[in-house]
Image (cartoon, rainbow, N blue to C red):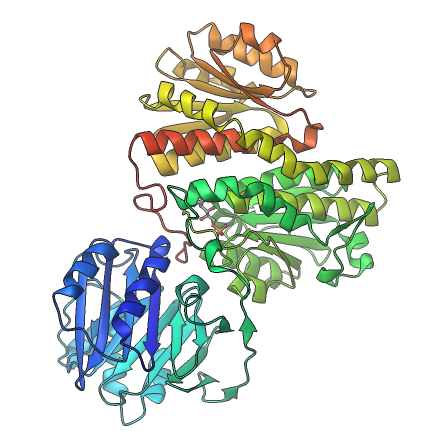
Length: 607
Ligand code: AGP
């Protein structure tokens, strides 16, 4: 949830660090800073606020140097102030550090250092790290870093520079992402690939408890005990347009509109003729036969995808499935057995709660599959197998294309399990495959209704509270739509199972509480219609998301958004599109920072 960047090479580091920070801004943006090694001293410019505020300050300084580090912050310890912004220096000014993560034992380390006369200039946990490195330095930077790391509890991705060894940067990670970019006569460090993509496509994914040393034309990796490690260099084939906004006003709108092609990408190579091919998972069919229960763990939007997955695994594959919010799962002592399968869903692959839930499940003997988007992310290395979402980099903090990719991946998994376990007929399988291939077209049909959704946003943006209602497999979509509205427009929205309204929440309904209802023509249609009538009787303004061709709804709803008719299990992936667009347009009318909503970060790597 912070972004770090490092550079050493033949160019001036400053513009590279700033550009990299802009590309990492989605990871956190309440303060930022850079440190440059120049004329054998470390120059630091840092400030509360956004990177554009930092850039203004940097221009007023003479920040010229061929190595440096940078940081964009999402505050955890210490409020977002200039003093708490990274980079942090040690007491002698010879060492500078940037850090993404949380040091859980920083208080005891800080008091130990204070008794030794160290004066701290910030409230952060990070400053403890650089003061320890300074204390332990005796001529070799990576050794001082390794000795320091052994004293830390918690998570970190750090980059360190020093006047003592000016042609070197040292980095390390535990629990927070870190990649090394291999250039020609220059090397890069970053929290995520987009930050280094303009300069090199050759990346090395640093793993937990590894330490990296980089110089202009060389790099090496070793573990915390000094043992060298050989690492694979990956070639990243993302094109840079995937990272730019492509002419859209916000990344989020670009990513909403990419969803047709994203779902095609997720399905490609995995649906062949009338068969499903997930051989990439290298899972024996016997293991699938022996699964007696599925546990799904995730957070936020990914959790909502998991709730849809439950319906699919139980309906198609007849496997009992539990879905947990990851931060709850890990403390409830789940009844996991070696015949359990745990599916951890995470776009970033770095969400601390989801990682902890996965570790808990593995410790109890569960086999595990990660549904993840970011290649080389922690979750992909800790789960037994990974089914990649193939959604491309998702920059907007509010997840959209990753969500529809997660749903697509869950359709694939549930269908494959059902096929292996013979719980569906060949005819059913072929019908589902046909429908899966239609999904991108249905999504694009929904996207074509964007102007109508925009009009609706104009009509409703001034309300302060919304209710989102649905039943069955669409209830998780009501939850997702409510989350989207909350997190980017800051308007309160609550999702409820439509059948539950009469047990209390209906007391909320009046003309000031618009009610958005998902009412597809499925087997629960009549039930939802009666819930709509209950709300209408209490003067609610009703926005219905209904199936194309449904005229009956017109006598109940104030406004209607239509989606294509699809088989019942596929309504979640079409219903979510108008809800994403509605949240986007409301937030845009309100002038919100849509790609970087307040208080949020793209990847929550703290518990
Ligand atoms: C999604 O719009 C939110 N920004 C957030 O709930 C997110 O889904 C959650 O933090 C999980 O992230 P992950 O998928 O990267 O694990």
